[in-house]
Image 1: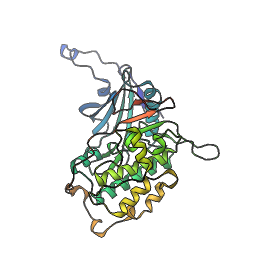
Image 2 (image 1 turned 180 degrees about the vertical axis):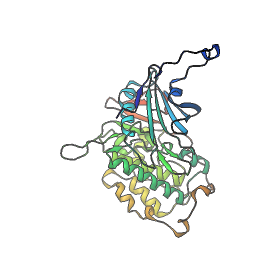
Image 3 (image 1 turned 135 degrees about the vertical axis):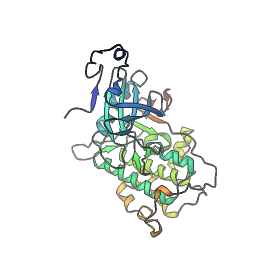
Image 4 (image 1 turned 30 degrees about the horizontal axis):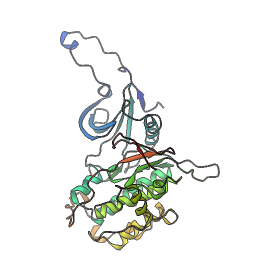
Length: 349
């Protein structure tokens, strides 16, 4: 089977000689057009990549294309993380994961073609509705658990789970996206998981062990990030303030503090507390499935049509006002920006 990455430095087939003056003046097909993709509007932008919607002849519909500039992207990203991302996602197929379709490499760019999620991100919904009622939050959190458990069962850890990376398809189902920091979670000969020493993700979603720079089990770090997502859904704000690194360390080291409003059930708060817990007592994914709030299914909600839900009525000032920056730190302490951050590196003492 051929690799899904097509290296394209020239058109794949020679252009036929034009027979008329009009034909000679026709514009040559771009690399993407030669593969049946016709670019549309921009749906995301960052320091060295953009994401654009495109129409695909091959897939008879819209797709999303991440366009990575080789000139702007950090060398570590191009040599390590981008190839790993492509290798990981091409082997995953799940209804709650954004589907990878194709990758095309040229001299100047890498194009990653993916399934298009037409209803934006979970963050967009939180911004619009101020917070998510527990009926919707439970459905979407279950779908997130399904997606992450599927990845973990196949030895893949995501390492950047956050509201911005949870997209919504046309039927308002969650699709986990952006596997830029994902990797295969390898085991030792004795069967134990290897600890990760690449400290990456988004500060407000990062587990205490990542923030402290301690070699960590990434699947447990994914669980922590999932707890932050659940908190953000039901409260409309993040549990931790990432504006000050040292204060952030203090906050994640203590029990999570819940706002008074909006009103959230004790069962939901209990599950959040179990996910945002120290490593030794942190709940595992299989434990989430046995949780009371996770399993709760009131009769009134059994036939509820999610797409007809009215917007939640917020009673407080919305706090989640900006996207969260992704970071990656190695032993030397250098943080370089990921897809959606500024390009400047930061030193962490």
